[in-house]
Image (cartoon, rainbow, N blue to C red; front, side, top):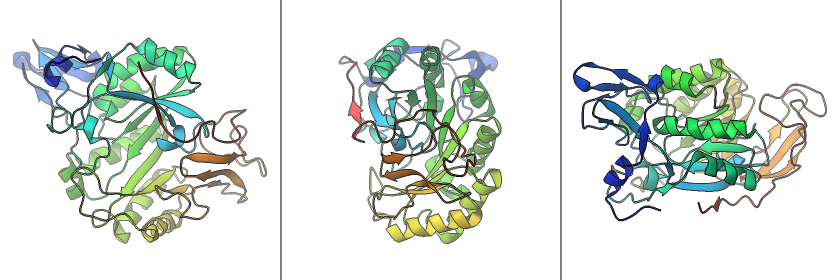
Length: 371
């Protein structure tokens, strides 16, 4: 557990050398960080945009050896709907982010060192401890989440190396503001990748702290490199909920692959964005229709369980058979055995088990775990 030192000082004492693949040495002792799309040039004694990667004596230091939180979640909460349905995932997060979204639901961890009200203490641990917890909890998947995992990819790879040796699958829940270098770096260890596609307007993205183009290029690259990719768009009234913008997103994704699951989720006021109201169910249903019209086979309205009809469930696009019945983060019935429809044998894209649970193993409620 953390002591009474200032958080910045405490975190600076618990770092690891950044992975060589994520550093370019520049002149005068400066380094170029390749962990996210900002590609920060970091001079001696300074930190990058994320505040947690910094230059010490000409060496780029990265967070390592701690978590800000660890818990067992339904994998549907990530959300991954086409990977290990009904199972739990061990979820761990660290501190810091390369964006500053005013509506962040994980702002207490993501905005640490940027917002004085964001107070979350680190818990020091080893990669092996996290893997042991996953195995003890019966979780087949380990996911880096809660803050932005790209900026802590060096530590995630240490955790995932141990996890893969134990037969576990690993995933990122990310904003997608990546570089080709960091995607190449994590590819041997990460199979599942969820990207937040927050908008389809560059002006909106610049308010959040990055460029739309970088995120779109990352999605294309992730899919081309055969990660299992699922996309989430939090639909915020007055920000990204126009028919035109949602249609543009849907067509972009469908052009990459009609088999990319698109999760369209309802907003609720949080952090510094308390003005817009909650997303009406009618907006989610409109986005669902736009996604299907664009050619996407799997569109999932979220955050309004039980209010969107049968659209939370997975259906076979070839014969319309029910494959997975859901409500919220709970799997009520899972008919998938392997990667084919049990009725017509059509291939269903995803990461499936030969003998999966017939329904959610747990209650659907996240469980925080002590270290």
